[in-house]
Length: 277
Length: 339
Image 1 (cartoon, rainbow over the protein chains, first blue to last red):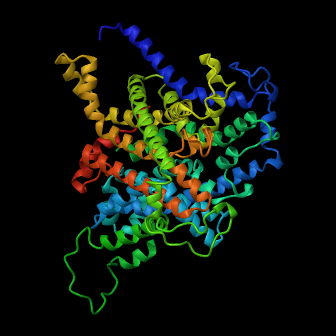
Image 2 (cartoon, rainbow over the protein chains, first blue to last red; image 1 turned 45 degrees about the vertical axis):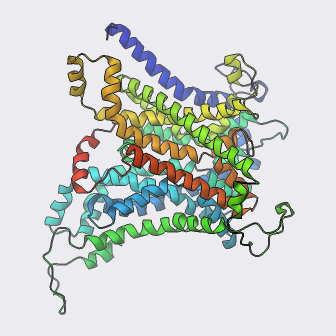
Image 3 (cartoon, chains in turn purple, blue; image 1 turned 60 degrees about the vertical axis):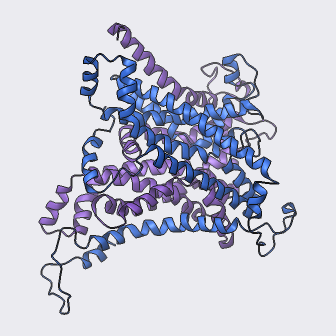
């Protein structure tokens, strides 16, 4: 390279700034817009002229049932994550540690599942749940969500289990542990960070799910937060309440952004271990 | 489950069962088959219920029609009439216009978004790979678009692309982005690329960090310029990670639903994708045609995945038995992005 080191350094800073701006600018815009007064929502200044929380008050108003939607999201995504994590732990252990016939086939099947177009599962499941009378129920959203969270969790955890040295387990088994005990007493505690990471990634995936939640509900009180804000009409029927929508968007996103900020290292490790190979 | 397994495992001091068959030489792996089956079966069972069964039902449903000619009357008969391949016939015949439009929209959006994401993602990864200061900040910020629910990002971009919104203000244009037309497609592409390019960047970065510095040193000694190094070293070495990332993004883009649905709206010709078409049919209780659309999308996704794995050699499994696992284990430890 013929560029001077100093210039290269500045170019690099500019590049980093560009990446950060690219990623954060739209999110910042959502934040700023949510803090504007309704009267100056169309202002294009980079800061709110007058800080106002009226949009948040409007969204959190009990008549909007948005808090209920947040609660629904929490229940659906939380349960989905918990169930997927338990099942995936067993499977991932077998995938990473045990040699058995058809292992490759099982792994292929599990990965292939995660590539399925959700809509081709939702249509028959919707029909089935209509027959069961399950529409507008939590289970009607949790069960189909397994189709993408479970493969994701299995894949992530398999990568984590593979990273742990075999020797620990062998040592435990030499000391008289059965495989099951070695798994429970040695592997699970050691895998806790990986399971935690997988839980975060799975939770975010489940929290962001839209198509299933949209199809399985038609009552506002059973909608999850992403569905609720997409149908958000706000106080006035005649104009799109962008301010409230942005405030609702911030409320749905902030828990995830906080998680991302706190656990960024782990999330990156989990995402790249599971996906980049 | 663990207790069952414990009972099954041989306990040293327990008296041997009298009528035991002559035991094979005990090996470290003895009994793992049963244990594996035990551990794997719950997952397989759940996936059978939520994936395999619905797929088979979709195949069956796609052969059944909608009771009554006018579904708007709301009368749903007890059973759907068997219509054979009529739903498919309609897709390629009478209802063809809407299907082909959705098919081309899906394909167009997939190709453009994935191409742009790949280019921008690689550029991001190269920048991040060089950066040593502020790495935590960069890493946290590239996760933000990924963590924002697509539904929320749809709303966010609808706000940005509002006729009085910031996109028009910044560019000095007066485009009605979220109405029908090519600009609607463009809006979806921009929003999707924003959300997912950082993700590709992240995966490529992980791939970059596995490449050892010596390779570049050798290339530099041999007199290779920066561009040449990128083309002949970086790209080939990062290809496995990139290929898997692109495959996953492609399959994800093929089933795109939330973003165009929220950003532009349902039943908009400009951006209606196959997923939206199938969902719209299902929402109007036309399960037969909906299933047929879903099956076609499924086949499409399957063919693309097969092409990636067969033609391009994407290593999706990343596991070819114990030897391969061991070999790949070492570099993989370093894929974690260093602080």
